[in-house]
Structure formats: structure tokens, C-alpha cells
Amino acid sequence: MTERFDFNNLFVFDLANNHQGDVDHALKIITEVGELSRQHSLKGAFKFQFRQLDSFVHSDHKESSDNKHIPRFLSTRLTASEYKQLFDAVKSEGMLAMCTPFDEASVDLIVDMGFDLIKVASCSADDWPLLEKIAGANLPTVFSTGGLLIEDIDNLVSFFTHRGAHFAMMHCVSIYPTPHSDYNLSQIDVLLERYNGINVGWSTHETPDETVAIQIAVAKGATMFERHVGIESGQHKLNAYSSSPKELDIWIKAWVSAQEMCGKRERDPSKVETESIDSLRRGVFAKRKIKRGEMLVQKDAYF
Image 1: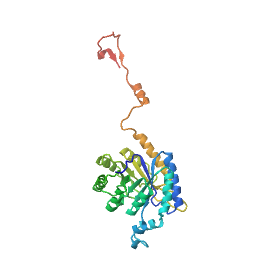
Image 2: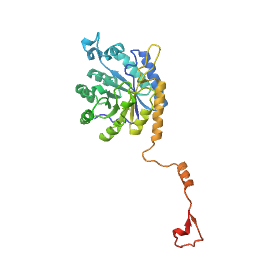
Image 3: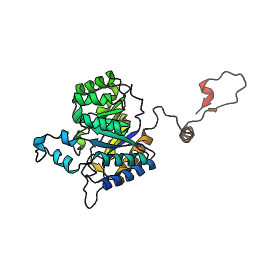
Image 4: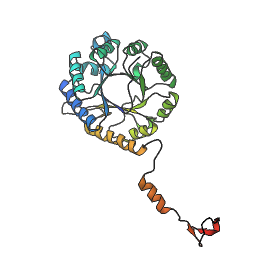
């Protein structure tokens, strides 16, 4: 049985390929995101993505490929020892370490390095050999639901439940960046109702200046949040759906505001509110002298 993990208020900061294959650049991102995570007292997890590129990429596609992702994977390649350096930096920042594997060998590396959590990408939702390997890793698991029908999500829930895994899920839209019309945040309602007791989050790919979506997600009941992070420099550009530390700070503050606005499920009126209400109520006064023990009727009083 996987060790129980509290997914509530988990913030996942996804590095993806925003390290640009540059360890020093990645360390700067980790340091600045770690500082933000501490500043806001978050349960922050910094997430990597692992692909064993020698075996992951088909030999016919290593020199040239019509798959736009492969050149980027190859050009931003890091070694296992470089990832270990970044992993140690994440832990030194007091953050959890999380990783998305895209092949079975990467799951072994995740376990060997001692990651805290494992993530299933939306594109791996029906990669059953990989899912079997992930379930066997015995780590708290989060899966994304981008592009999935409800029956696909049913299959994932059934799969991880029957293997005794401790898991949660992210509502996700795999459009980069995601336009307003595709957020479909009401899906959070559906997931919470359908999978009672399972944490549901919002894995975001909207533009970095968007703060309303996370606030709606909070109001809908999302308890985990994921955002791609990076830093733009003279050498490295940031994509349209990743947040700089400054943008991330504004996004987190929007979450804090949403938490405050939503409040508790059952509200306890404050003293200020009750005094305000009392000052607006009508008073009850006697129209005549009333003796002790005398029966009162409504005509004896005025308001």
C-alpha cells in the first residue's frame, strides 16, 4: 500500500524543458521558485520530466523528425547526474520533488533518486505498460486528464484503485496556451461528484497573466494546482503558457484571495456583522405600564 500523502493545497511547479538544457539556468529557476514557495508557506513540489532519449526516440527520428517535440527534447537534454544536481537543489529549497516519466526506465530512475511524488501525463493515460510500472513504484501519484473522455478517467481511477495506489487527479486542458472557451472548469464539479473522496486539481496552461481561472477552480473545489515555470533571459525565451517568478507570485496571491473569499463551508457571522445587524433591527416597546405576571398581547406593544 502506498504511503498516504495529503494532496490538499499541493502546488506543482513544472520545469518541463524550460531548463533549456542549461543546468545553471535550471538552478536559478529552482532557487527563485523555492523562495516564492517559502514566502507563501506553500506545500510546493518542483516537477521534472524524464525521458530516456536513447531508447525513447525511434532511430528514424533522431536525425530529423516531423514530430515538433523531438528536436526540443534532444536539444535540451540533461544527464542523470545533472538531474541529480537539480533534485538536490529542490530538496535544499525545502520543496517536494516530483517527476513525470514517459518510459519505464524513467520510473526506475525516479525511484532510485528518491522522488516524493510521481505524475502521469495526459498523453500516457492509456499507456498501460508504463502505468503498470508507475503503479509498482509505490509513490503518491497524480494523473492529468487532458483530452480524456469520462470513460478514460473511469479506467484510470479503476486501475489505480485496484492496485492500492494513493492517487489524485488534475483537470487539465492540453492546449498551449489554453483559450478561455476551452477551460471547462465545470468539469471539476463532475470529477468531484463522480469520484468521491479523490482530490481534484487544476493543471493550467493558460497565459501567465490569467488569474481568474485559479480563483474559479478554488470555488469549484480544486485542492491542487499546477503551473509551468521558467525564467526569460537574453539567451532563453519563455513560452506562452509558462510563468516567471513575478507572474507566479501574482498567480499565488490570486489563490490566497480566492481562499479568503470562499471561506469556510459553514459561516460563523463575526461580531462586527452581528452588531451591524442588531443596529438595524426594530425595537419592541410597551404602550402602557405592565404589571408583573400580566398576560401580554400584541396590542400592548409597538415596534
